[in-house]
Length: 303
Image 1 (cartoon, rainbow, N blue to C red):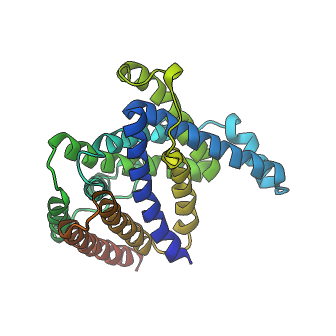
Image 2 (tube, rainbow, N blue to C red; image 1 turned 90 degrees about the vertical axis):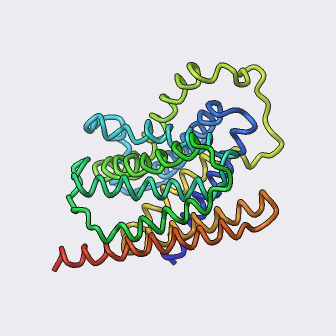
Image 3 (cartoon, rainbow, N blue to C red; image 1 turned 135 degrees about the horizontal axis):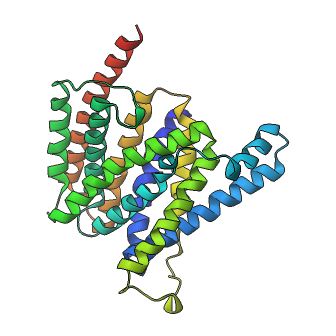
């Protein structure tokens, strides 16, 4: 079941990118970011309150008390702020390059950011020196990405790559905060800080978008569920992390992302692109190569 949930997490991420892109087309780039964070914040707050009220576990009471009373190091709360840039960049790229290309570039950005963090031990993470053998996997991933970019727009390519790199940083900060508090607390602050940051960003850069007084709900109700899917991704990730190996968790999630992205592009364009399919296969093979190297290195370090 947990293998399926990991695969499902990847699918949800791909669908979330597409839905958030549709929201951007309807309400504008910066307005959509605010909507996504409001929906996510309302959902996680409601979930936390219901669970706390219904629960008889003393740990839940303690968790509720320390939600606002106990503060951690300030930079651990920046996961939500960085998450704003991820949402903005992905929404910006939607419509300029394919969904599968956005996801593949994000994967490449995550791979590079992960290598840098491993090499230098940033964010108090353990150091794992870079090995030249990883260039094989990275080359395959890059070849797959190039195959999936159907219309080359340099800015969209760059920001999708940066969004992927920022995912690693945001995910690491949120995980560290969750370890010191709880999953609910970390998710709550992720959306709260994200909303606080997205409001001034909208005021500064979103002047050309629809005014609040002119805001109208779209008939395509599903475009407002990006924040719901975002919360679902966080919850599913925390369920699976402790129950299956990091190797299979990462592999299944990314396979779910890549091939769901290919399918979404086929639905949008009404034809299956052989380039996207081949690119997805190359990205998956490249990811498998690097994950196998990481898995072997991890086993050696433990023996």
